[in-house]
Image (tube, rainbow, N blue to C red; front, side):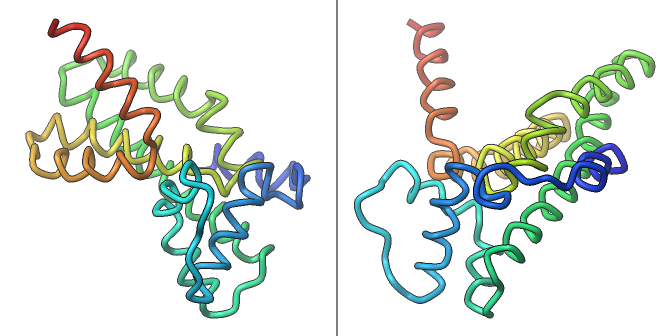
Length: 176
């Protein structure tokens, strides 16, 4: 968890749109639109992924500012990814991987660009939620919680459709 707080604390310099980022800026507009009870039209790519930000929609309905929404998502990312790193560690340990290898693997994950940098500098991005939930799915797989995995797979169609498409395409290619 400290590894994820480091870039947020020492480099509190936001990127485009005060931390919203290019896509995040649009997601924030949609979050605020939905919080007002209005539908999103004309952007199926982003509107389908908005389900990853349900806490922000609720917070926006309670009057949180854009800056507060960005910071809330930043802290949610830090919490989710910290828990997912622990679950990833437990998953690898459950496979019988040596402790040193598990530690190096988790350290490599935590310092990777999508894990350490993206959630801090682009907090409002559904990729961050998908990464955390992928680690949860891996942990569920090692525990044989297959029905939970089925639920996540169905949810991933909306959260991260390109990931789902690429996995299905690879699975189809392997089977045929």
